Image (cartoon, rainbow, N blue to C red; front, top):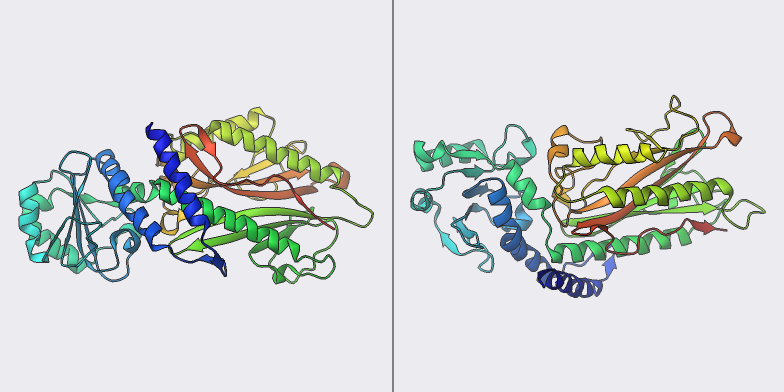
Length: 413
């Protein structure tokens, strides 16, 4: 019954946001949707991540523009979240007006000492970090004031909030997933519109919107350049759709027919077969609650078992088995912009610590993988390249798509 309610909410929200329309691919902000995301993050995600990280109280000192302005609100102040048992985390703001729909308690910053003493937290997470500078958002002056206000007893209980913040941002609620789905649909629609503009022998890559690229059989790439699109080109196009602090970008692939061709040539059909085969390998082997690093190892093993060569970089490896198709993986988070880099990542890219993060249920990320397929008929080391880039979600059933994923290579005549 709970699952049914979750997905009923998801599809209701998806219908709501589908009513929005993009202007310059920036969706107009729907305040009801945005407020719902904030409320649900506090109600559903915050209690779980505080308990997972064994945090009794989270103190976030915010001044001016801040990475968590969207979640906490735009005003400066001291935001305090206390786990006092039960299903709900107590939310307080000291020294700021705050949003009465989000917060329970308001008061002056001078109440901080008494507020903490009354609750007697054992572990206090604070927005500082020596390990991860991106989350070290408290100023030296505010840190000093906080230590003084807490006194020796409670200051000794302070710990960095970096992992707590990462988990909080990575956790997804149905309203976020609905927005993610709408952005995915918008992005896919815009890709098709850009492909419609192509006139072989006339259109330049630079005349198309998005990240547009073509690679030749030696792996040399033209990217958003003045290169003129011509017959035989296999074009990749990534396009982003955004709303406030959220974004999603998908990819499309198009092939330009040569003179005399009426359908995709054999090599293009073959590389697309590899794209579908590897997609199913990924879908079957990505699960919630494993780390990004653990998942990457599983995928490498399954790819190799299926006869592929796993390539840790997005370049053709000339020293690899020339008969094996090469696959590169970069499954990074999508959705809330601030959490796209510092989030669970199934990829050899990025800092090592993010591969130790567990993939949460309803994690939204991109199925971004690159295929380098050798084609000996063209000569030694010659190959064909495509990049697949779809948005996906990890659910109880595994990997699911919130919109129709890439189904074929678009033909341009």
